[in-house]
Length: 312
Image 1 (cartoon, rainbow, N blue to C red):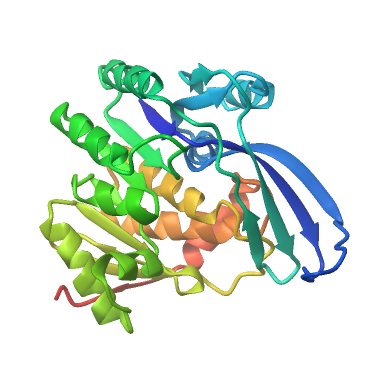
Image 2 (tube, one colour):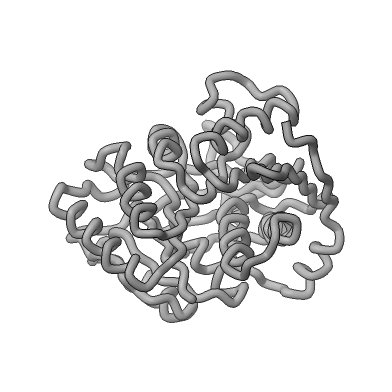
């Protein structure tokens, strides 16, 4: 089984590691890397490490596609990206030794109506042999913030299961289409609900409103406090041990990948949330995206604190 990951606004991620970022000063980078990125692409990388194959699609600039093509070959991903004239954007990530990351994200290519129609046609082709879709990341210039909403509705009608992870208006509109699973962080959930979430009870109540919209799984990520997974029948909290944070880049995408892998394997909520929390916790201990050491993952799984919460 292949999972289709859709990345509409990919980027080459230029990541620089430094001791401390100082504003209004010259900052020297200790280590640097340039890697293909974008939330759906990161998900595909981690899926590969976990043993699940993927098909990758979205829009990609034809002038600097080589690093992406090489990565897709490396992770055995089926390349269904639609090429656009121009260059895929470069984003800058400055990772400090204390784990803080400053993102400088550029807007990317402008996408016209014809490209949107071509991508919609591609989705209808992919749904013929893919049950699981991950729609993740921001939207490029030129497209409506309702685009994810329309495509989730299209995929739902075809019987696909959509895992959705975005932000801002794209997230808010997409939630209205009732994807199968969503992964907002607690700040995004608070923005959607319209007020601060001061405790776990309020987080659960807000997530319950998404469940009432027809969403099957709501996974609320809370950084070092772990995650709260809400379904119609169950609320589970998972908390990782204290980690030595190197970089938070890709931690959320790693969680999405682990959730996707777990659900495609038919695991129950308890096993799935434990696994996803461990994969995400491992991600913050490294700079690169992916599972570098499977033995560390197995050890982390044993250290996840799991508890059932009242299903209010």
